[in-house]
Length: 405
Ligand code: DSN
Image 1: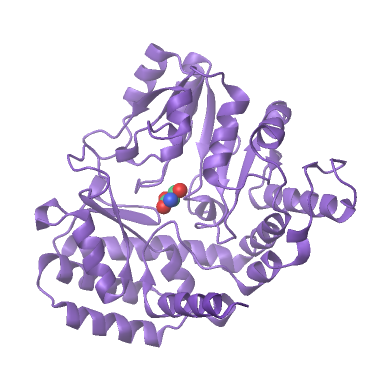
Image 2 (image 1 turned 120 degrees about the vertical axis):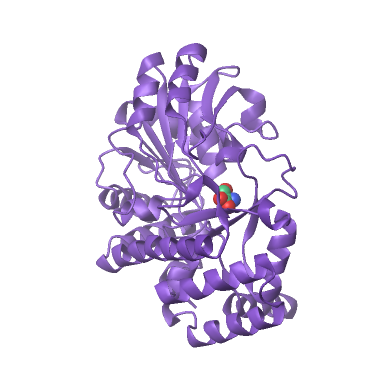
């Protein structure tokens, strides 16, 4: 390996060892996942699908992809068709739109500053340029305004409704979205990217059986390699498969598909249920500590893996708070909050979560400590030096488990 690359890897390993990621979309993967990812599966072109490839030499790849399908269906206890080829969550969502819609058709989706994702039709993305986007958001209680969703569905007659989030602290109930979709004959897509691991671990409602299509990334709470999957009801299978390949992508990343199959296997073990419980329990503890310490949580709390802190009462911007935490070894990300008057580059919120920390082994007492450090820093009651030493001491006592290092 080139020495510069080796040194970059070593520096990143040290950064991950010496800091704590609170970014709710990040996680650690097992050594087994990374071994599979680094295998010779990456050498093979396998355009097409099992039994129907455009290159020779794909007997093993066919078996591998079918194995990944079965693992996915087993984990989520579903008979939905599954496509494991999307290279990322944004491509998965775009593939669904391409499969079901024509340019100009209307999508009803969550607004970005209310917890949605760029790929849910934000104006700066291709999804926002190709389709007519109608946005729903949260009400005064911080929860999605389901009355608004129903009204918008009736008024705008969207062809697709998106139920999915990347910065929303509450569990999603999928049935009200189904009802809204049925009011106008729309298809319902659940984007469970953030919560897939919680669904697998029984800590979040499942969209299967309710949504027509379920998309997910594989590297967040699900603790797999970077990738994505699309599940759909059997009658949509052919459209979805064609939209992924050849519609949007060429050769599938077979090494990633193999690593996804490994991660899905790990997520079906009882220890993963304990992990998912720990993610949610830890987040509740962290949120309670933050609230008790004077932080205002967007939406009033959380019952998932993440929370958003409204920084305005502290007179801080998102960038300021993100930098402040990073200087003491806590890595979080600035985030827009509902009706944010500040721009997305320096918004008014800080997004935090527990998936990475729970994999590292942090439990409730540790999250209380992290919460006290964050409130101390944001309120100015604690010096950076004191917080930095405390984070260092905590992480020294809880090294990354061997299995994940
Ligand atoms: N960037 C991811 C997140 O942080 O939520 C979503 O793609």
